[in-house]
Image 1 (cartoon, rainbow, N blue to C red):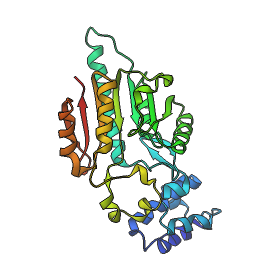
Image 2: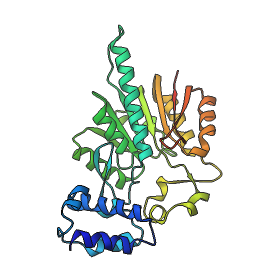
Image 3: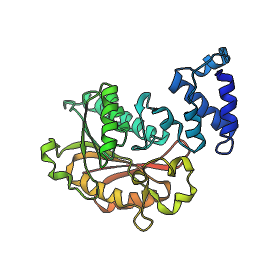
Image 4: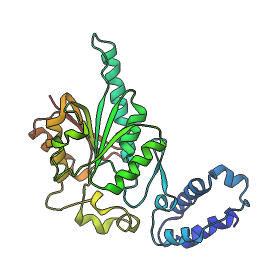
Amino acid sequence: MKISYLRTLFQTQLALLYHKKEIDAIFFTYLYDKYNIKKYHYFLDSDACIDFEQSDIKMLTKGCPIQYVTGKTTFCNIELNVNPSVLIPRPETEELTAMIVEKQKTEKKLIQNSKFKTQNSKILDLGTGSGAIAIALAKSINNATVWATDISEQALETAKKNAEQNNVKVIFFQHDILQCNIETLGAKSLPDNFDIIVSNPPYIPQSERSLLHKNIVGYEPEGALFVPDDNPLVFYIAIADTAKKILRKGGVLYFEIHEIFASEVREMLSKKGFKEVELWNDINGKPRFVCAKKL
């Protein structure tokens, strides 16, 4: 099939689900991830032919995200495998990861310019999913040792595959943030003096389910998305309690948050004794990140 015809097919078949610009974005992502055809290649030779799989367009017309159709996505310039056992990493999470990397680089420069020796960073990613944050931090922060947890065995298998594919070492283990006391996992050689704990936990209230596109609620893992309407901070509270125990003095806790709960998360962290609690806006000006120190 000519790729020019395939573009028309995408526009026709997906018109009821997405706007034209979104369909084009899906189409060019598909071309590159599936056939390694870049956008400029399309415009140089739109008559090029490919062996198109009809099952792919059928999945897309049912609302399946393009990342699950191709089985891959890009996060912080690294390629990750994704499937319905893990969330598809969002641009906001890239912003959070970049912020951590930049702050860590700044801190290390300050230490190197002082009388103290630079310490290797110990980082814990709680609820890692595809391993996106953990792997990106392991690749970007020199000499960091990174641990990552998830409740899902399938998610951990995907994360392990992604770490191997990107040639980084991350120590993965299964852990239920709400039910399992992380301090009892001594067999996993888990330290009690982490420099950084980061998490992008579930934070969407069940009442917002109807507002989401079908390609989210119909395919992405529900347990990684939603929280009860009457207890939306349940994961943040549990993680903050854990962080109080295993962060070193001066260690930092980072969260991605729902914009409507920004004040509540900040207040909760302050009440639990964290200091220097700060909120950051995302690229759209919405409060989506918070960090706090254990002092």
